[in-house]
Image 1 (spheres, protein in one colour):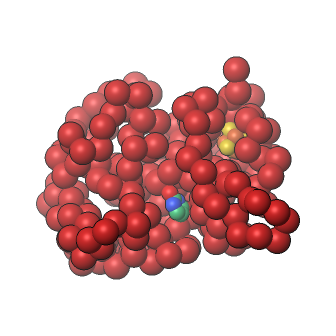
Image 2 (spheres, rainbow, N blue to C red):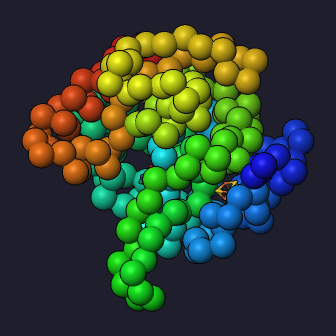
Image 3 (cartoon, protein in one colour):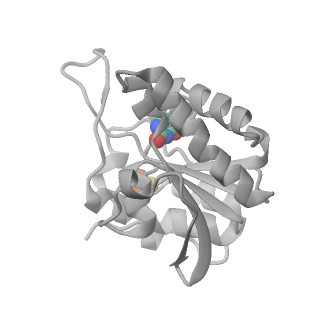
Length: 207
Ligand code: URA
Ligand code: SF4
């Protein structure tokens, strides 16, 4: 089975993990992507945000949530009373998966498979073990399945405070929609309001 496991160093800090992840070949996604996009932010953050996978901009720049979805997320966090600078941001899958009709044509995001998400899980587990956040904000279905299992349904639990055992640790989690889903929504304003309302649940759990 695909797995990042042999690439994850034991007892490593975030810098060492990031360096090791740059060489991960735990699943086929490293082949077409530009680079590994590891988590960034405050290593002692109270809040960890988990997205799906890097997008086009993230793949080019090597940092999570620097494209349009990231801009929207920062604005929503700020509005909910969570300072983006006080968070640690990462993705369930560390390489960009895409389709491309021809070279130099636009690269279109493709959802990672459950196999790829599972393969990448050891990196997320290592980040959680080092950062030890008080709260995890789960952004969308892929992050939800990675952390809470394949039966996760974002519509059923969004905006609620969950307490679950993950990798042997009690974690508090607030799931919400993925910021990219807000950008794609027919009623973008309503979708954005929903995201902010869910993030306010997270902000309240922290205070
Ligand atoms: N979408 C994600 O899930 N993660 C990113 O880093 C960017 C867009
Ligand atoms: Fe490794 Fe994850 Fe990249 Fe697959 S997606 S190669 S498991 S870092």
